[in-house]
Image 1 (cartoon, rainbow, N blue to C red):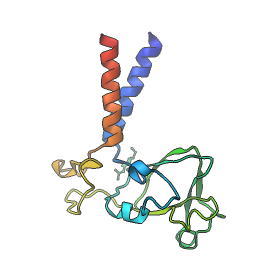
Image 2: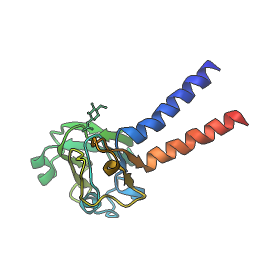
Image 3: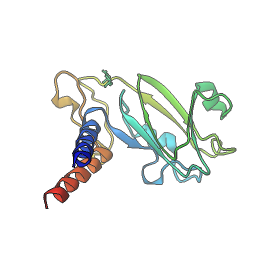
Length: 174
Ligand SMILES: *[C@@H]1O[C@H](CO)[C@@H](O)[C@H](O)[C@H]1NC(C)=O
């Protein structure tokens, strides 16, 4: 019972975090992180409005791919030999923890050149952010509703987790 309760509390907190800490973006949407030319990642990124504390999820088969955060120079030249950080779980969650540019590429031979790289620019949320936001299904920004500039984002993940928690709660009740 204690286990169930703590699990429940954890899930509720997780759901709240998805709402409070920033938007969550699945890189490449349903295609995920791939080298098969299915996604133009810079085009994908250009349709988004990334803010500090937003989260990126890189989803891929880790037998074939990874995620490396690299410098601008290494991004431009597709150099995987001196990464800032390496992720290889196959479902990596990376928080944009500062304003500025983040550069990611797949370190597998040839993949970066095939287009498996993405540049993300994170900005500080501003109270009167008038730049176009992502499509409503991706991230519904309610920042303008809050005068103190605290951005409140709902994301697919946040909503998904919330639904999961609700269904779990219902499962306990019935
Ligand atoms: C990002 O999150 C951290 C920790 O929750 C918080 O201290 C910081 O103020 C946040 N930054 C922005 C720009 O929202």
